[in-house]
Length: 501
Ligand code: CP
Ligand code: NVA
Image (cartoon, protein in one colour):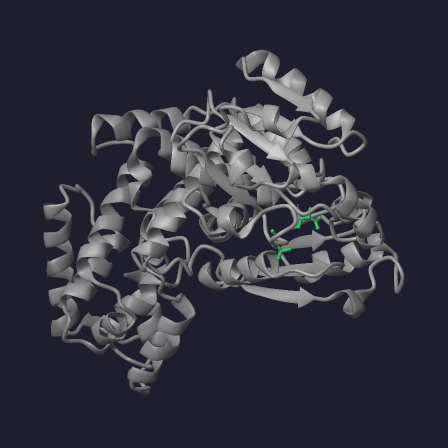
């Protein structure tokens, strides 16, 4: 009420109207009402602009007593009614907002209705946020999840507030099933990832990988249900540095930022000439002043590592000569979608032991999937990564093996993966490699060694007729376009989890 009176006074009115009430409700962007509105995809700035356009400017005498207009009084009555219905023993900004929405006849109510704010969703968010915030009510499962969450060691009050806010926003952004125990706890742990870099799969532990996957699943569901997610990264900017070409990575990161309410800036090689026009460190020190997160596709892994070292904002590796972590996350997420449980599965990788293979080895090992790499001698994955993956599976019981026999690699596999024989930057070796790699082509004959229901994956772009045949790419085992789609959902999860709220 105090903020509403302030608004009325500022606009020269002696009466507090519904419009003043609404302006007051969004004055504090962290209030429950503001969070509900943001959660429904409504922009607080836009509400303020539109409502102010509807409010007549008057010239009231200062010091005169403030009174409520009849309509504003009705909003207060409705707020009491909402609180009663929700079994709350207090009147908060969320109840007043519900009152404004219900009193649909006012200019403020119309502005909200035009922005797609509806009473059912608002109540749902109000109830959900409240359950999390008050650690009370809801199902036994929710109560347990919340108590788990709040007892996470070392979580500051500020972190708890951010986590609760994120849950409320995820839930309202279509992430409706966030209320189940595991997911809620996962979301609460988001504070662990906030502000971090993703240069390698080694940067994530098993719990964090699970969090990325659960968040991606929830965001994907939200997209399918056509719910707005534009409050999740509202006003945030991603700088996308590309030293190499791209279709999937560029488009999915850019669409991700659009869907999350932020913005992406594409920087092609000639725009910044990283390390030539100025040092990598200086480019990082500039970018961190303007944007909230950087993704970089680079030739040398050292370049993305140096960017991360000098930028105090998250840096995401969008492919280097050593790793392609975003790809591997989307790949394994796709396997999870098609096969369910990841533990106990066998993934076969056939072809060049390159960046994708390296990231997959680390990721498979972390999630308990066995991985068999069939590659020509001299084209094995990075030996340090193979050693790290072998060490990791000591705890999970999975198996990591490297062989030069493609049929042995594929034997009884649940998923078969391949990639180009010559990666970007290896164009001069293409002709030589084309002589070595044909036995490693993934074709129907090779797939016969896998399980009958095996799926086929490829990071794409595919060189049809080289590492894979048309019959496999377009055949019943292929899930390559699901995989490409999942780049979007997984990267959205990464952005939501890494970028400061
Ligand atoms: N898989 C992948 O990273 O594709 P692009 O090279 O098109 O980005
Ligand atoms: N290994 C390939 C992957 C392309 C997405 C490359 O680095 O070119």
